[in-house]
Amino acid sequence: MNPASLAKQQRKEEQQQLQEECERLRELVRVLEGGGSISDNPEGVGSLHSPQEIAELKKQVESAELKNQRLKEVFQTKIQEFRKVCYTLTGYQIDITTENQYRLTSIYAEHQGDCLLFKASSSSGGKMQLLETEFSRTVRELIDLHLLHQDSIPAFLSAVTLDLFSRQTMA
Image (cartoon, rainbow, N blue to C red; front, side, top):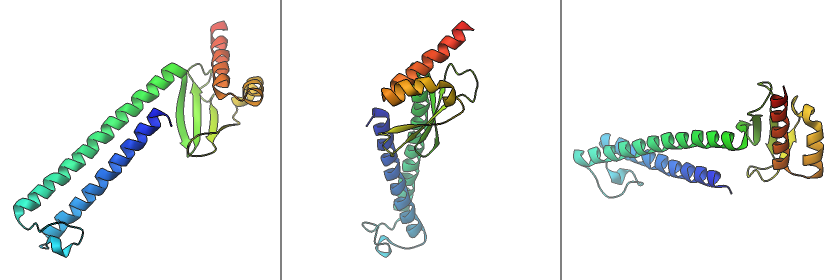
């Protein structure tokens, strides 16, 4: 698994844990504010009854929510940074169109709609299949050579990049 996917999965799990903790604390605060005690709620622990303890629980909920929000913001920033670096290094902007389907747009594309569509055969993305697009019909020779004969998506994408680049520099 690549490092970005691993980090994304870890952040997702941490976010889920924080959301679950927030929900538990909210429920505990609701029970206590309603005049109940922890013993009325089997998921609570101990016997907290005082307003100070309720205030402390509220602070914990707010703190957990704030931490969750900060994680979301950091994660969004890192995602954008990663996308920019991928675009700069590979020359392709990669967008998820639907589940397991990815649109690649070259930095050298002649038209805005010139893109390649790939579909992952599984959620792990182990095997990718090129889907036909208007643009892919224009690079049939490259598909035959690099995908069908050599079975290499990276070689295909590199060849497409070089082809598009040469079209721009010769014009």
